[in-house]
Length: 226
Image 1: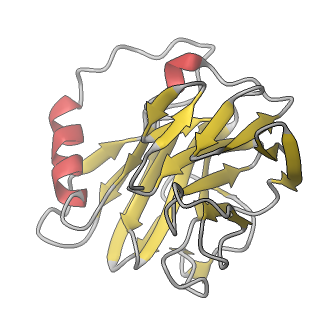
Image 2 (image 1 turned 135 degrees about the vertical axis):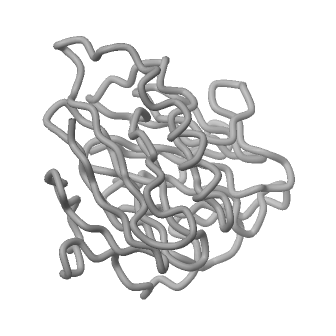
């Protein structure tokens, strides 16, 4: 599990353990990390933590979010990363190492984009090279409802976020021992959790098995392990 050390200049304000699935950052007092800084948006950024991995996402802030001096939209956090928001910096510390090749491995499926993303993934089927033995097993999600039923989305990312922001969102993370589903949420902190095989998932990441049926944001999907 990682942590963020929040600083304003040389002054350390607080240290936050990333124990929750979502840690919001912004100027408004309802954020998990409130920054009293006019250059920081009300809802500026969020850190999603799944098992031992943490991923930073800018929430379309006015002035942007920097990691190690570079503006980012989404970024898997690695030990020593320095996040800059306005006049504040947040230093990330973790014993887990993240490969830099994972820089753009988070995909948000916004309303109306799930079908398009699934179609693009379906067009790529059969074009992927055989996985090396050292890599985790391949997996994909198959849409089972709607006009695009049968389309498939390959889970080639370290983290694939699915659903409809503001309605219901979950994330599938690919790890060496398999694929895990975790609830991310919607704008309502009490939003319903995804359902797997007819049962709502709990607070912890749920490992997916071949054939599992996922119900999320009005869509039904099947997880296929390869």
